[in-house]
Length: 193
Image (tube, rainbow, N blue to C red; front, side):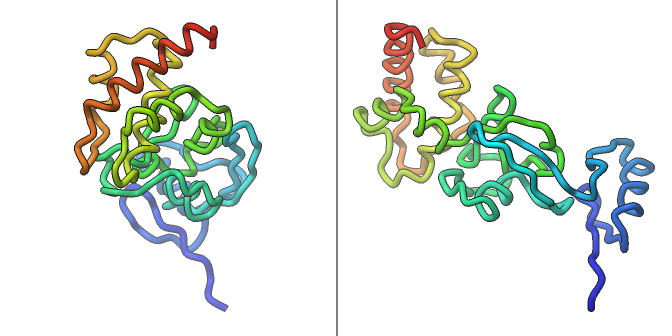
C-alpha cells in the first residue's frame, strides 16, 4: 500500500507526513494555515455546517465544486483574473480558485446556490435585464453584486462598476449588469431587506 504524500501549497515540496509538512510551513513560510486535526476543517456553507478532510493543495473552488457539488461556482481562468469562481466568505467576495480550502476552517461561505435559495432580488433582475448570454460568468457577477449590496445597500453607478470590475463576461453584457444591480438595490430598500 502506497503511503500518503503531503504537498506544500506554497512551494510544492512533497512530505511523507502531515507533521513534516506543518513544520516546513511554519519554518519556511512563517505561517500556520493548517488546522490541528490532520486536515479536518469545519465550515458553514449557505447556512449548513460541514466537517471535511481536505488536502493542503485543494482550493476552495475544488472543495465546493468537485467535492461538495456546488456546481454554480464556475472555473474559467483558474488564475484569479475573471471572477467566475467568486463566493462570499465572512461577508467578503473572494476568488475561490485562489483560496486554499485548508485556510477556510471556521469560515462562513455563501455560494450562488445560497443566494438563489433565499430568492434574492438580484436573481430576478439578472433574468429581467438579460444579463447573460452563455451564462457562465453570471454566478460570479451575482455573488459579487450581492456582497456589494450587503455592505452598501444604495450604491452609485460608479460603485457598482468598481465592484464588478474584476468580473469578466465573454459575451459583453456589462451594461445590463449595472441596470440589474441598481434595480435590485431599489427593491431591497423598498422591502427593507
